[in-house]
Amino acid sequence: MLRRIVAASGVNKHVTPHTFRHTFATLLLEEDVDVRYIQNLLGHSSIATTQINTHVNPSKQRQILETKHPRRRI
Image (tube, rainbow, N blue to C red; front, side, top):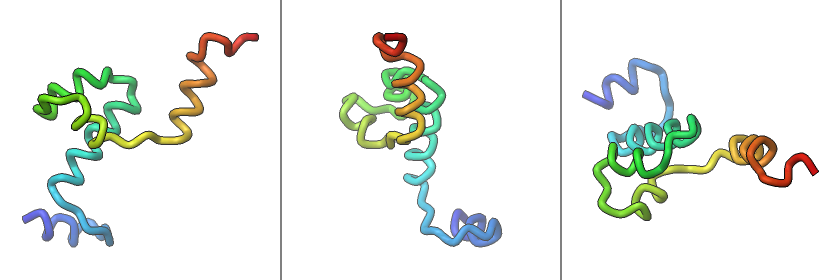
């Protein structure tokens, strides 16, 4: 079923159910959802597993540093 949906969408990448989990976790993280909530939503017993399932977006990381770093106003 997933293959049919991916083919019909025109996406030319290998997509698996696990791809959706990774994407879901990463998007939540980018929206500043606490990683512990993401851990719970994904059903992980270890935060380390959740961190493996999320990817850091370099532009989001830059934005966080520019807006939240304690010495940003010096």
